[in-house]
Length: 465
Image (cartoon, rainbow, N blue to C red; front, side):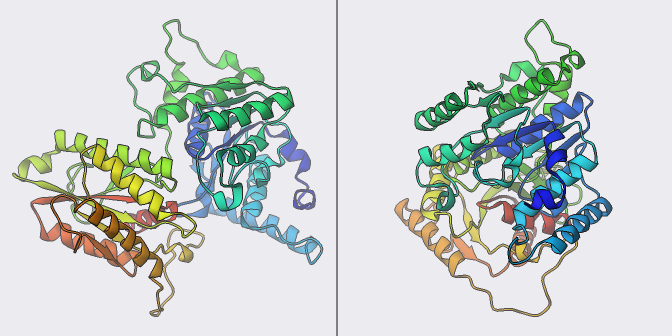
């Protein structure tokens, strides 16, 4: 009904959509696919979630966040039109549904050649699933997340994700757990379509170019994105835009798209330039390693990435580290997760995977998010005045962590006492980290920020301003 009110039914039907669902990697897959098609010369629209700093991040036109002027204009057009026609019988659409309608309005009015849409939650009942005939569909890696809504088994979760599959629309997925794959295949069979399984991208196909998004797991997402982009080009009659090479590497536009892809908060390394203005990424006394992992599987992937990249940094020190002889590195975890997540699953997965890779944390910090203060624009701040802060969740996270440490008899030779701290706010935690790194000139602080994309966004906002 809201789409009817906004007269968006026909514009939505005209959009040439790439639609992607999944538990892990759907945002990265969409980012890769959009970047590839943009590199092929098309005008692109990309809708992803959540945003980290500014809501405009969810709406990208030609690889850039929508301008504030355009966002405001489209927002109020949709809001005012809905406000007039909604009421007790037809309520205003909920937050994400409104943003999805806003994306359709933006992409149709901006006349994009291709709209790449990331499912918000599930698939079957998601606000993006009003698209009746996408050009191609993709389902990234499936796992356990949002179980309070999607169900407690992979069968139920896969069934929800399979809801984006459509009759007559080519579909692709990556290798999945057997029970999940059987659900996807069954749903595809009912619709009379084949769902093709895409292997991870072979790095040799990139001609020595790195992926724009870091981590071994991104080769899986890149492989899916290549299949989606290629099928979009084929079905739209644009294969003449690319030059297929004889020696098995990807077309130049594909390589360029994959190498320039950018998505904040996923395996992102940010040195704190306030602590050291002259440092490079891996030689700064305080470096933040940000990854919005929040499911057991993604926590394991995050731990592998952090272990690998910090070992690599140690093996190849920057010029600042070479000058500071005898430098040590201190590994610190900065963590929060939503209360619907189970820290008794997330934290052991993180800790065990790091331990298997020979990495131990010296300290863990638990903080509340401050995302409730986020407004349009990047300059929002908490309201004035000191409010009573409920830290019961952070204290329970600390208890889980301390119990894990006791079970493992401490990490890096430390006892469990003093191995963790709870801060009442994120700014106070960042202040403590900065003071700690400045007071210990012989130590480099490597801080893994994970457990929540909202936490990652809050940290980015604080250290970049």
